[in-house]
Image 1 (tube, helix red, strand yellow):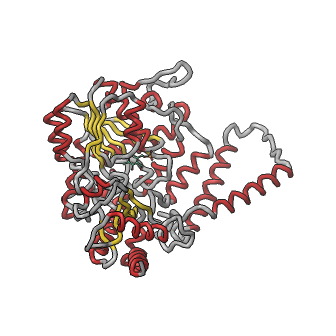
Image 2 (cartoon, rainbow, N blue to C red):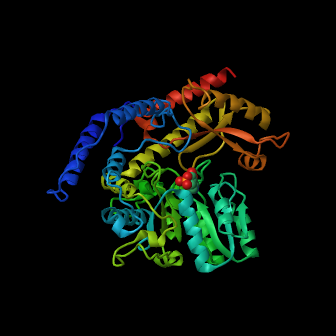
Image 3 (cartoon, rainbow, N blue to C red):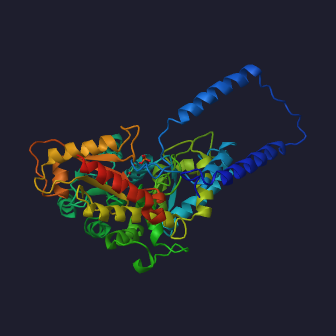
Length: 487
Ligand SMILES: Cc1ncc(COP(=O)(O)O)c(C=O)c1O
């Protein structure tokens, strides 16, 4: 499915790109075939300019970071599959725009099919949704639509939620929003949330299915109980982790018993099952849904919510018997090419346990393997127990547990194992938390001052680390332990 860390599948991609180019050229030529060609007016000067700019582009290309490689596990960056490249390229060359049906009839139909697949993935029988440029925009649109429907009330999300939520509340003029503290697993603290819910009418509570820092998955069972008790719109920010639900679905998108899946954690299995009970969801194909950047999605269980943000204009949306997605979305122009990229990818790799789930499962297995290995390490300690595939860990100091000493040593690991080191054996990132959050996760940590706590962070969102009996992951662990032994 991928070009591969060593470009193993280049030939497959090349042959399809060649076919695509020929097909595209023939398609152009077949439109009013009797029209006279205008001929090419490329001058030598233009060709020379292109050549020189293209050479510069290629040399800049090589300075790009190796996101495709199993040695890169720093941020949510990964390798797009061949299907996404082909799907995007195929339609980018003709450039449809999915805001109105007439701007992209073929790709709008594809987007509607992709949306139906995403609704199936999330267990929404009916509903509405569409692609967005990313998770932040999807979050913004969801809260906007809900605010328009219910007018007023508080908004609650955990203190480890994505930064977009605070911005969105500011943009939408939400007067009362609260960042609820998390428990020792970086999940929203339900008792503290309930105290807040008692105080005021609530508009929306946001549950995380994969928080950005540690991939924590909130307790949906608890959130649903509170929803019954206090009545609010439950939105899930499943931008990162929503596609993990593909691991528990059979090819008909029915939930399988846990024993028939590879999911080891009862907590994770249960929350993935309960995603279907939410009211709306942000889920990003451009994170675990395999697509390159530019593909978020928002889904609403109640189709009527879209009418809250209905938009018309005198110069567009003329075919009213067809889906005009832009009438119901915050964004205007959106690339039809991205719908095609999603469509081809999910035709080949559907978001269930036969497709995307195979890949996500490998990522979850890596995180589990890594966590268990760190538990046995003399030099490193786990900071979180991953719900998904993001691990945080720090330099082990069982005796004194002085936060600033641990942070200092951990920063030395970061200098070696990060983008800061051009010769880094592996590239990871760091996770910096204020003392009150760090202490909650690790009660034993001793803070002398108000300095933030630094842990290392590894995002295992590519499948390669699991392959060949965790070959790359074992190499990473060996190099981390070797480095720490010298600290
Ligand atoms: C949980 C979560 N929500 C929302 C977002 C925002 O997504 P985007 O960067 O696509 O706007 C992210 C991004 O990392 C995320 O992790």
